[in-house]
Image 1 (cartoon, helix red, strand yellow):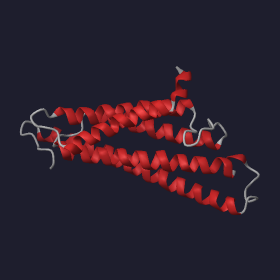
Image 2 (cartoon, one colour):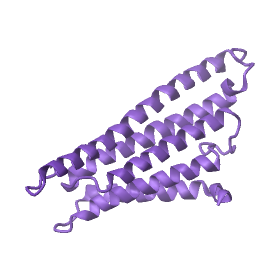
Image 3 (tube, rainbow, N blue to C red):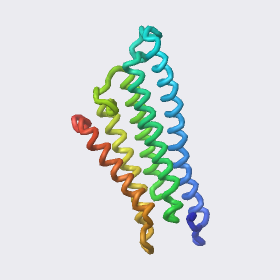
Image 4 (cartoon, rainbow, N blue to C red):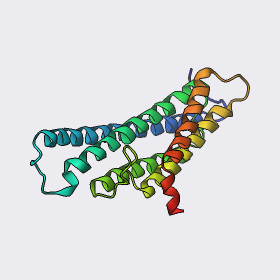
Length: 196
């Protein structure tokens, strides 16, 4: 099911639809970039696991920093951004509506991408929090949280926009997914409250 083009202003509606698709494409392209970086870092860490003296003289590419940073890039940069991109692709098709507030969705994308990149670089430079899978520093966590809130706002408003019919189970699951993603990120990273 695709969004219907309004007869009042078809140009504006098609521009909004293109904007909705570009938000999904940006997420998927960034997730691919994080995947490539993460896999290369994990491959280097795997080689270091077998040959510990290889490149051991420089801290940022030591095994103890490289592996957690690679896992961070793969788990958050690739998987999370990729799934959010899939949600941005699916929600307009499920609802028959264009993505609401694509500018806010783009801001959310930028905040999340920068937050994940800053978190990975901070892990490489030794500024890890020391909690497995939650190593990113509070500033990176705060950027990601703000980005996730923007994403959840855009997805929730898109799903809520159409009031003339009952919601499908897929729409409810997508809505629950983005709300839980924001909540779990906040609860898992309560240390970011130290910044406030």
